[in-house]
Length: 345
Image (cartoon, rainbow, N blue to C red; front, side, top):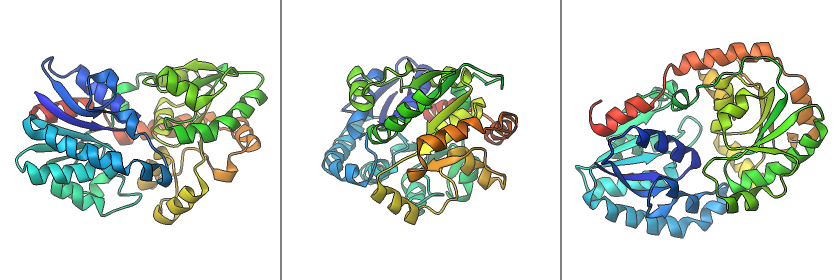
């Protein structure tokens, strides 16, 4: 089977990697993905952006890449789009107009429950299988099917709630968010005297990316294993995104720490009407439940606030709510996605 793949995000490539491991040996992928997974037409890292101004810089590249992806689709069996709706929805439309009979599978749907609700209609119109990873998304897409959440496939570790000797720092996977959080993370690490400080870096990052994004990290031990580090940690500082849900599932007490450009954050607040930023809190909110963790945003991201969050965490309550999240998500998604790609489900 030959698949056209569009996986621009680091997390998308992690999920793609897990799926490919259990696909048939003759499965070939073309398109946009991490070079460690094959020979892409474009490297996923070329599209790694955060913020409105950075997106503008990538418009030219995106237009050229979209045309090339449509050309590559001429002899593929199916299309697998993962996340990244700003690129993948226009791609889905172009592919469907050029190849009406080509099956388009969209995995990890646009977060229309947060903003840009109109994207739901585009998913319904231009994709054949809309594969949701959150149960509540059925309320927003007419054609979506809940396939499970990929984190329940990959997470085998659970925090036992006992006191550990480690505090974890997860500043995200995009250059902008890492650069904005690392200065305060370094100061916090200096203030925590009685624990080992471990900096979690995405496993697909190159040496050049690490040097460019993080600067001096001599204050930390380095880990490329998010799940094991969270399991072995007493507490974690986590940038918003998938890592917050990972920490919630594992059961490691954490505080969400998010800092964007002031203009981007202002625009985001105007567009996004959700009461929370973290995925675990959003999931619980749709279930009518109380939030799991504290969220420190923008000017709240100070050394004093981060230290206070660490000192005042209720571990017992956190572990209890963590179990509720696992119950809501029910199961992983990899097995269902493989069946869908193979045409067996």
